[in-house]
Image (cartoon, rainbow, N blue to C red; front, side, top):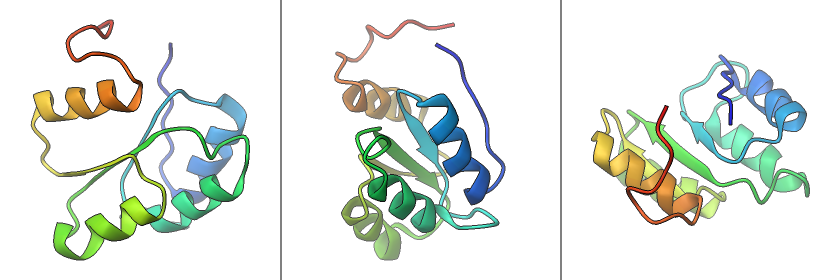
Amino acid sequence: MSTVYASDGFSAVMMAQKERPNLIILDIGLPAGDGFVVLERLQKNAALATIPVIVLTARDPQTNKERTLKAGATAFLQKPADNAELLEAISAALDQPPGTMAQS
């Protein structure tokens, strides 16, 4: 399993199409297409729509959490996220029991 990085919304969608990741951790505040645009594009692509997306953002959860979950995100986490909370969200998104993920 490898990790790839995209610095903007456009690159994020392109990388997802190219790499077909097992999981995407996405910030809402991205240049060239914010996280909501990325979620929309992922959901419209049948090959990418099943990839779990965890939104990890500093944006206000009261105005953004429901919107991201309705847009197809698997989980919404507020920055700075607790490591245990993030690992639990990743495990849940990948349907793995917490604490059983391989760590590198």
